[in-house]
Image 1: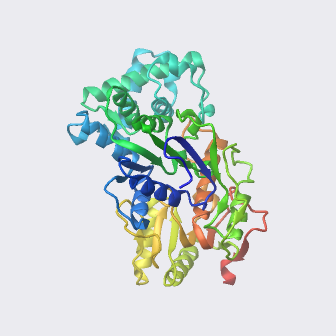
Image 2: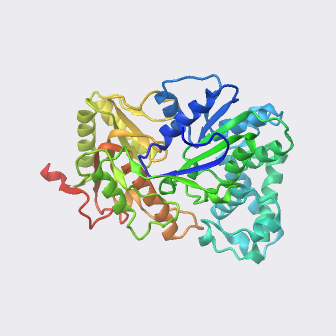
Image 3: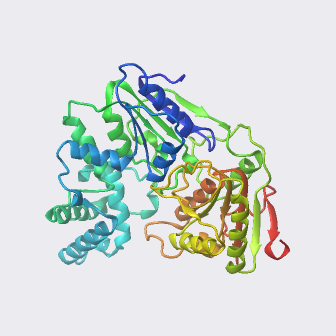
Length: 456
């Protein structure tokens, strides 16, 4: 590989530029350098770990592939910091602890208006504190609000939030809960500060745009001083809502490598993806890499309007079964109940659909019908992609969102889901809706063909 085997390296690439493949090849290369030490290839979600394991046709005793939280748990356990499995607060438990902390402080300070804000506000704000490792009030007070501008909390009122954060920590520790999923990285980082040993000589991060600053800092700290840390990312695919930059994560680089050739998507899909980024809700970013060259060829994406969801579902099931006989095919949904419903409908037609999750093996090139959430599909690729339920009601309804989140922020996060889903396709892209089309879809564009379901 041309990338050096020492120091910090950042590689930013467009969708389909081969970042995951290069990350795998780099990991294998470093793992097979004589006496080079162990190599960790780490990514954000477990489904992508399975994908990596499925497509790498090589093995090495020096190479470990895992998601971040598995790495973090393993390290803390090796240091005697996790002696049993139930000391990590689940998402549901975290919500209950924060709700209790809010009740306690509302009673203690009944006139403080900050405590009139919703539980969801505090959930998001505490997550922000943890992801940046802001462990004292002065750090939190000075912190710039990356991706959190809409919460509108004045600096002089942040002390009330920090009181609640401290109460949350107190409540969970009283129950023997040492960590949650957002602050585990902070404890890993601090444990590494007193640990003279390093397990890995080289660490490669794939889909790094979805890691929090503390996750990246902990991984940087995990590398041997004579080793390397490599970050692969694409800010256009940052779909976990944080919008936290790798530049806030302690990576020390003077040069950023850029991959701007798209090997996966046909020119037609690249043009459609670019049209998505022209939407007024798309947030511009100086680190976004646009494709300058594309290799693959394919048909225009298709958008189909149906009279109702029943007709939409019937068509999707029929077409997915048909194209799934000769090519890898995925139906990408927003909600789990949508996946369950489509799995049932496929089964009724004699097709056993496969849901993509952490246990799904070898789905890189199987001629089958898969179902996935937008998040689990991250980093994967298929010959044909179906994206149903793109109505305003289903895909971009502004109901039940966090009080801390503005309409613009909500749509900025949601539109990236469409971008990620569309760029999973190596050939065919079929999109559908009934009712009113989501405002996040590039309506006035010649980058796709439009049909009415009744004419098909």
